[in-house]
Length: 118
Image: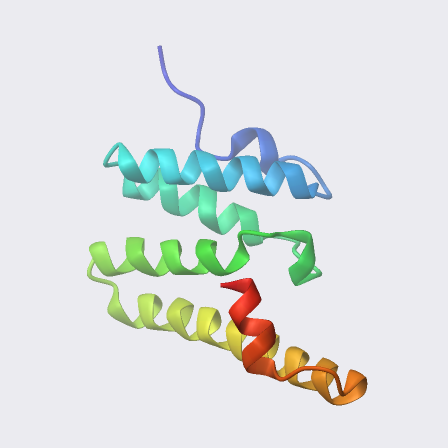
């Protein structure tokens, strides 16, 4: 019996829900752990399709990192680097948002905020 394509059930939907993205990300991690990097990559990339707001996909930075890992495994280093850079940009924007929040509230430093999130 042939297994359905990775992400097949999710790709046909016009607007993927947050829970669908998370479930697809988990499926991709399972493929990755089973030694099926191509199926994992398809799942991870499908998670990004149609994504309009970073907060609608909790695992976004991890997903970007896993895509980079798969491309690195496939010796596609330029593509891997692009996804590592995207992950880095995600964290830079998050840090800038925290800094702006700190400036508007005047209560605590960014380091204090980060200490509670780690």
